[in-house]
Length: 304
Image (tube, rainbow, N blue to C red; front, side, top):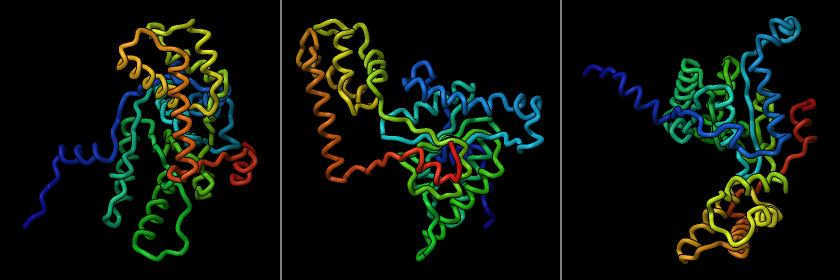
């Protein structure tokens, strides 16, 4: 029986399972990060944005190989804005965002995972997209040295193929991770910048509450005073603050009350913090390690 030729529609259907391409949903204007973090990101982007000026007009290509690519890793606690930052970068550079569905990329058939990786990078190159590998900790972890199963061989093969693709790829690839203590050293060296998105400080929390506590939301006290008090609560990520806002709004609407008070927000925030502490203590949630600058420099063999 002759092999059935795969139609263009079938190829497109397969591609859509491996990844999806969207227009970025966020910009640096609506992603709230510490000012120094935004400055650091834009400084890194300048190498890509002004590539011709730096390497050709200024002549750096005579002493440093011009690599027309930029690989970044944003790491930090969940909810600190890593994925939103990837959207903001794509928006800043006026590019589409290709989001990798790694669950579909990783195939049970030997060799298919590598083919899938090659396919997505080829597509990104043809469409000039920013590639996003979200939650990439497992993908970038150390290769297996004592292989005891076919899956170990497959994992190593996948990472080797990805390393080779990155060596030849010209474009922007963003990884988001929670920590990189277990990163394969080969990936560490290929990624141009590792930027930590820290938990918001008081100033950033104030900006986050200012953003989420919209003017029309009914409250029982002056908005600026309420925001200042809410900002005092530490260990609240941007996602936590958005969640607190939604839960408070829901409880006020359900109770058919006209206004929300500070105590309403306080009750919700306390519940969120207690839940985070509970999951952390029971080890149900992955432990997040804060990595020092010195640790990163030691792993990279240089200074940041």
